[in-house]
Image 1: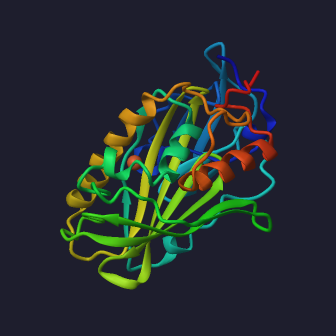
Image 2: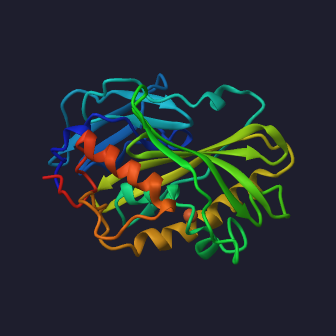
Amino acid sequence: MAKTTDKAALNEWYAIETSVDLTAKPVRSRLLGQDIELFRREDGQPVVREIEAGWPTGPALPVREKYGCIWTTLGHPNKEIFEISEAVETDRRFVPCGWVKMRASGLRVVENFLDMAHFPFVHTDILGSEPHTEVPGYLSEIRRDIDEVWATNCTFFQPRIAATESEGAFVQLTYRVPTPFVVMLYRVCPTAPERLDAIALFIHPIEEDLCRAQPVMYLVDSNSTHTALLNFEQVIFMQDRIIVENQRPLLLPLEARQEIPTRADSSSVAYRRWLKEKGIRFGTTMGAG
Ligand SMILES: [Fe+2]
């Protein structure tokens, strides 16, 4: 497919590569249907360019290096990349978990990340277990002042909430959607209850129904090995991949729902409403043209 005409999608920042993986050797990639090339200049500066008919074209795209990733945009974002305040706390473990490619709309991946109801069935005996299948009531809102979606006061019974834990407990969760293709989870840290672990999921939309996603974690955890932290997240993410790739349609429907949403769906309802208000079409059944 060609570059999308969806202005709302074009004008966002996207994480497209892990910083440490970018070298002087140019690599080809694609963003929102547009072929791109990226490499690191001799002075260390990342360069991203659009490719047409096999050749770089136009001026270099805007680029940022943040949260362990290379970010770019094909449009004109009206603000800088969102802030993750936990990223500057020096006692945290930074765990980028690696990219996973999925045959699904990136928006479906965000929606799945927001959904607590699937924990007992998809992440059985890790993030949920029967008979604890009920999603207790929580609050979802579009925060107009910062233009983000938040879900707060979320709780769920989890048999094994983090790599450090083997006992079940009710976890306190907060979800945040800072841009259409990024979703975050804040979780009361099991080993430091006054602090929150911050887990972000960066999505690199390749085509409408194809994306890569990378969980990036800022954790308060001085006990677990890096491998244990990675393994814990990767097991969960592989389980999600199967679910997301089997959803139909692959694109996210934004039309009024046929089914009556349940209370557990309220974050998804707010997310879809927000996307619609923004005019996002890429990755939705509205068609990106
Ligand atoms: Fe999941």
